[in-house]
Image (cartoon, rainbow, N blue to C red; front, side, top):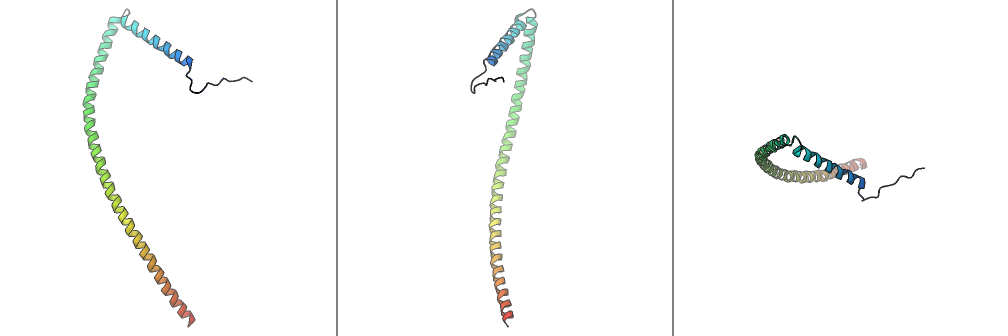
Length: 128
């Protein structure tokens, strides 16, 4: 029966760290070759063009962010309105529940009274 070595909890894998460092080194080397190698000038132009495109997209996103900020304000105000309406509704519901409970207790007491009087009349008729 083979024993399986268990990895201790809380310890990081040394192999994983080594692989990550190696991958980063390869990526850095590839980037350096792409930018400084035989076709480096063309690649640098492509990179600068891509960076400009990204900058334009970011600038457009700022406009979108402004628009979404306004929408967020409207939504926040709507939430406040909904909360206030919900509070008012809960107060009304609580009052209605209280009124219903009172009505039920009154009905119970009335039923008890009627039951007692009917029982008394039935006893009187039975005794006659």
